[in-house]
Length: 357
Image 1 (tube, one colour):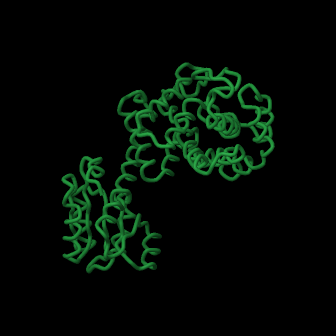
Image 2: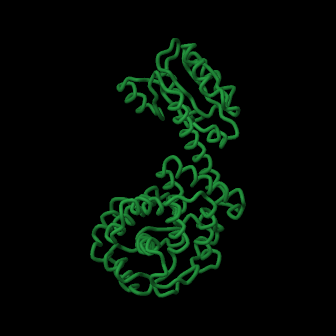
Image 3: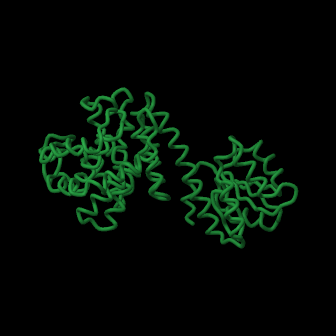
């Protein structure tokens, strides 16, 4: 693995828990090339807990067969303790029954002996990135609820979170989307619901499988700009500050390394509030000037806005009432042909809404 990838982190502390001295030295040798990596050692669970009381640990490599306090007992303690439960634990085992048992106990990953250095590095790196993502998400939520939405640090955290998610697990993007849609209650299905709506309409429009997959994940971050709008302005859809959110969202992804997903996301983020008749924002695009992906997002976003409470749109309508409202927007807000596809296949969208509300 490229040394530079681990340099994304200021410092890393790995705790290796194993009573076999050879295995311990092997782990030390694997990570010896990384100057920012510290490997701590414990020969059983009791020693591991003593280390945790004194050191801040980022990830734990845990063997199961040990004297005094084995891996099962150690894992039970770690995942039942509020101070330690968030630390990723990679269990060392080759037995399928042990994998099932420890997974149910809260293990984050597994690696089999004898493991290759590259496999161990990759697993450790991926879990460190996910842990970093969770930390960034906490900071983003804190900033978005206060006065720091316009700060450079808030922008950096959003950019880094998206970069990590795209580089490791794209489904993590959904956590950002759910945060942008939070209202009086936490809508944990928001990103999945938006993705499913977009997937259906994209299929009806004849997009290929790669485009459909990218659009599904794009719907997790299409309104990421809302997290850069001051909290008090998020309830006023007609304010100048609110209408800047597509542009603010674009600024989050503009400087990230471009992938096919991010290229699509840029179009959707900045253009999903444009209207077919040119009355939308931020650029007043009209008709087919509006990118196809953004036209899809516009329809499913409006349906969701009508049927699910949002911070800027707390009132909701039944699905059928929402459909009547959308019909009246043909040729005004929406591409007439695309809206026709939505109306003709409405039951598919209503089923998703009922399932994921």
